[in-house]
Image (cartoon, rainbow over the protein chains, first blue to last red):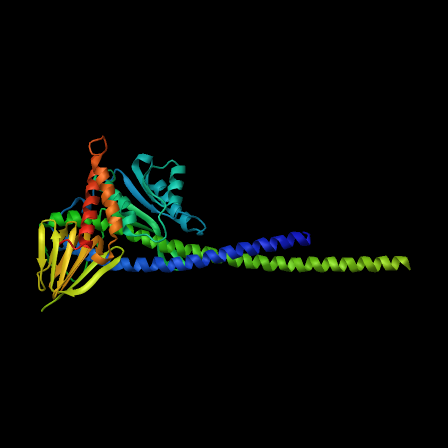
Length: 285
Length: 137
C-alpha cells in the first residue's frame, strides 16, 4: 500500500489540477456567452444577403455567373475549421477524422484536393500527413471580427474563381447547444442550395444584373465562411467547457477515493502501532 | 415629411438603424440619392460615405465594399465594414493610410500587382474613413 505521504501528495496535486480545470471551465463559459452574442449579431446580415441573393439568382432564369454553375470537378477544396488550442475534448479530432475519411474515400492522389486550414490544430494535422494546405490562418483570437478573416475568405473564393478548384466544401463543428456539437459538411461553392424565399421582389438593377452578381456572390460566399467560423467558435468554447467540467468532476471523484484510502492507511498505521505496543507490553509480563 | 427606414448591417452586427428622409450613397456607377417610396433596386457600392439626412441633421457613415438594397419602405446597406463618423478611430485610419502609401511607393520594384491593388484599396478606405470622421463632405 502506498505510504501516507504519497497519498497526501497525490491528493494535493489532484486538488490543484481540479482548481485549474474549474477555472478553465468558467472562462470557457463566459467566452461561450460572447461567442453566442457575436453569432447572433451576424444573423441579420446573413439573412439579408441570403434574401437578396435568392431574389436575384432565382428571380430571373437568364442569369448566369461562374459561381452558380457546376463544372466538371478536377480538384476539390476543403475548408477545415479547427481551434488553435487543445483541451477541448473531441472537438478537433471529430472534425479532422471526418475530413480525413472523406478525403480518403473521394480522392486517390494529393493532386485532386487542397486544404484550406483555419486553426492551428487542423493545419498541423494536414501538414504532418503531407496533405496540400494551400491557405492557412492561425492565431485568431476569441473575439473575431470579419476583418480578421476577410483575407483568407476572399483568397478561398478566389481559388474557385480562378479555376484552381472546382468545388469547395466546409467542415466545421456546428453549435447545436452547450452540450451538443455536430460535425457538419457544407458545400460552399458552387452556390447551389440557395434557400428560396417566399416574398420575391423584382428589383431594378443599377447598373446591371451581372455586375451586381459579380459583387454580391463573392461577398455571400465570404460571409458563409465567416458564419461557419462563428459557429465553430461557439462550439469550441462549449466543447471546452464540457471537457473541463468532466475533468473537474473526475478530479473530485479521484480526490474522494484517495481521501478514503488515506484514512484507511492512517487507521491501519494506528492499529499497527497499538498492536505493537500491546505486543511489547505482553512480552514483558 | 415622409421617411424611410434605413439600416446599415455588417457581419459584425448592425451599425445604424433609423428613419431617414434622404439617403445618398456612392454606388459604383455614380452617386445615388434615394427618397422614401423608391422602387425596389439593388446597386453595388463603392468605397465612400453614405449620407443620411433627417430634418437639418445629416449623419455620415463610412462604408467599404458592399451593396444597397432599396424597397419602398426600407433601405438596407450590406457592407463588409461600416462605421459611423463618431465611431471612427482616426489615428488608426491615419496609420493605415501611411502604411498603404509606403507600400504604393515601392511600386515597380519587382513585387506582384495584387499587393498594389490591395494597398490602393486600403488607401481608399483609410482616406474615406478620415474624410468621414472630419465630415469633409
